[in-house]
Length: 240
Image 1 (cartoon, rainbow, N blue to C red):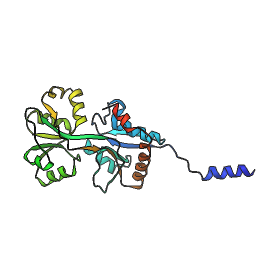
Image 2: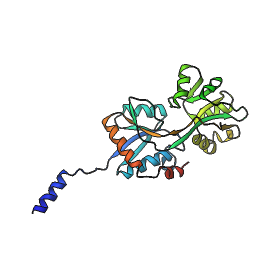
Image 3: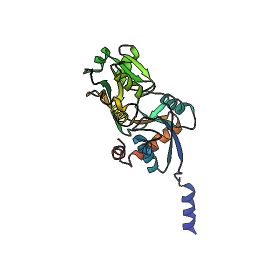
């Protein structure tokens, strides 16, 4: 009888980890994320594996980037968005790194750009994607007007503008550029016209941006624990 009572006390007071389903927003950004990609892309595969390792299910819903970010902060259905570069924010808290991407500049092969420091880029007209975070220094120079930059809604528009000579270069992830030039029917013909400049801006860590709330912090901590249980590089390598 005594042992039964002890067991009942343990059952009553031992917290059980209940499997939950969470929702995040993302965008079509091959090969990292995309509704039609295998496993919905490299970053989504990593995220789902990390949450699964902790006993939870992740559902990702895809939107244009600006809407994906807005929904993550305004719609209670979602606890965050990804993949994102870390930046100073009061709205979001960021996970540990879930992989890296080579951030660089796509240029016209017939007119390559030369630069050593970011300040050297003031002589060029650049393309960026609206609401994307790039690097702190580059974004500051663009915000101040020292670097002339035009914003578009997606990377493919910038690649087309570079190929047509309408801008000198555009900020882009090297893996995204490679995927586009190989798989996008509208951009394949530009593969002999554009290339990634040999100098990278930086290898950027990718993160999930969780809402800066108790719920968001909870899921960030769960995700970070899950990341430690999986092989991030091996998972990403299947899709990059």
